[in-house]
Length: 257
Image (cartoon, rainbow, N blue to C red; front, side):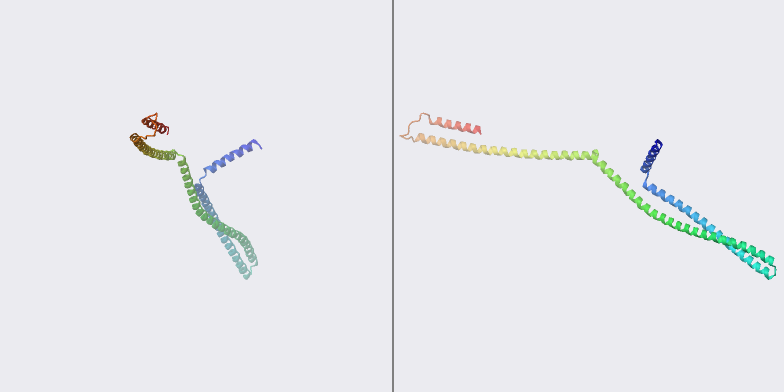
């Protein structure tokens, strides 16, 4: 393949691509209808011209036929008058006009067929133009709808990636985080309050139990000192020291909890 062919194909490809991208369906359809209407005008002119030619051929044929009949009558008149030469001349003229009439008749038949064909083509073109106009309106409506839909999709696409939509998404995420933090804080506050009350309740029980134990120990020591047994041996460690030792052990146990 030569360089010229390659360059020519490249240029034609680029031109076709440029034309295709620049084509507006609505404008192309309007221009197509205008072109068809121009063709219709030319077709009507051609039909009118053909009909005029047919009319002239009809007139010429009728005139030639009439002249042939006239010369026939004259030939008959000349024979009636006994002038054969004049009758022969009249018949010669009659023959010439008759031949002309025959030629005009053949031409007229051809022109009639041509006019009929042109008329059928004209009717077909008018029908196509009418159909094309209806189809053009439908196609233009579809093109407008397609453009509107494409613009809408582009708008939606731009909105999904725009900063405004991004801001909405960020603020929504931030609000969700704030709500989660608020809920967590509330749960922690409730848990801390519960633990404080539990500590107070448990501390009160221990204090009550400690007081009761102290009272019991105090009562027991008083009874023992008031009613000593004769047979009970004397202890080496005083009773108060034993109580203090037990209390100290209890405190250490409580501290280890």
